[in-house]
Length: 177
Length: 114
Image (tube, rainbow over all chains, first blue to last red):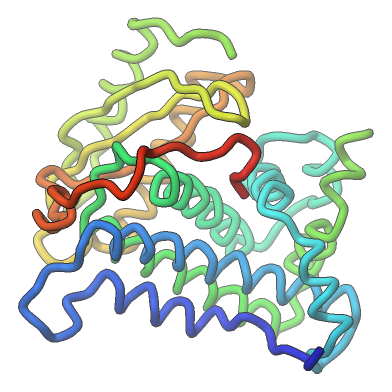
């Protein structure tokens, strides 16, 4: 098996924008394109957080088979629970472990919660009245959150590092406390 | 999940409609109790007036979403699972998409959502 590369948030964001845009043509995007746009925007942030959490855990600069395997340890439900705690709710032990967070970490967590809800409807709910405005707004939200993640990672922000550390199993441990 | 009363719904809807966020006008708030393989939850759908441009101003939309979530958290407490959703009044899905014949009946197999 060949070594892969991380699923790039930037590529997913570009795809999400393309799906929700007219692409230079006259035709409006279809409902299914708008749904896939919202889903791709969510996955852009999900993969960005998973990538950063994996890098932090393994301390590696590159990407190989070990990173490809470990990145799968991050789950949607764990990140959702962590995002709730980072925004002041949910599990008490998690909130204690997170402590005081940089405001940008809180904004990433808020974005994750909003994108998670939006993606649930986009992927599974056939009553969702999807629109270009909503899809593009969530693409903008995801891009903003991914950019903040890059900035915080580059700056070595300790509160973001704590958030990422807890994404790797911290939620499951906290549930038993 | 405890049921939400009509009075609670009206109180939340009224408070959301009264949020004064520049450039964003809340038209209505819709509630629906639902159940999926993960359990029961409350869908809260906020319908917004269409934006003047392609999207609502990013910071205003952020402020709205977060103030709505804080308001719902305070009103419902932690025992109520909910999903917040935003739609634009006058959704613009393609008519072709809406009238397309389904390939097969809908339905998500239980346990197949991640």
